[in-house]
Length: 360
Image (cartoon, rainbow, N blue to C red; front, side, top):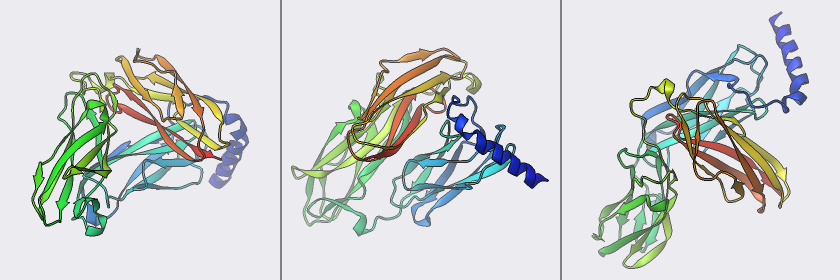
């Protein structure tokens, strides 16, 4: 009997699919997860991958399929059942994180797409990696017998007024001479600083430390590069630094009252296959679901996306904001980009909205 009911519900759902695209984004996600975040704590790089299972329930009145799961990098993958989940039934999604070759701390997002792209739920995993000793074949040579152990530094999300975030790169001088070092920072909107010793003895190691600078009038990404010079010669290889500078943590505000930035529409855009030169219009609808004013600081877009968002916008509780986007697909190849909404949302001040597809 139960099998027959399941079959009937599934058939009705399939018949309703052509009408689903006309509906607007659901105010409440149809899959309700028991938790949205998991902290792995401290893990050892040499121990290999770790995993965590997120459990959910279908709280909608119809069968649902997890259509896509989007991750921020190849180090994070998800495993899940691709069969329909009936109303009231439960399911699981397991996130696997591989720390090998990565830096000290990590914050990864996993976007779960359901309901024909109208609902995107973001899950987050984080932790700290105890690094294994870097083998010689994984070092980056920046001068004759002078190496760095890594070329990327994630700073994560840094709040105004908090302690500066910092990451370090180990420089190894395996030559038989003392070397002289200098550094300069490209980009980063004057929010990045670097410290390093002026000299490193033959056969010695040194630390290059990149630290955030709390520039009170800036909100948004901290993308920058640190270029090192050895004995006056600048290396063509740069250390890439990335992160976000956001609002200070709210003090004296209950979590239930804090502003909440909800993406009601446009959180995921699948372009499919498009010819080069295609121009598209898209929109994002944001809503303040908190009890205090929400300040949308910035909407950051990739180079091929234009936006009508200017300055800052203050949204009262329940108020919506429509951001219009224009896309011009000039280059052939895979499209995998994020639009970032920066706000004073107490829990998630950076929301990443995904664009993907193929340009022929």
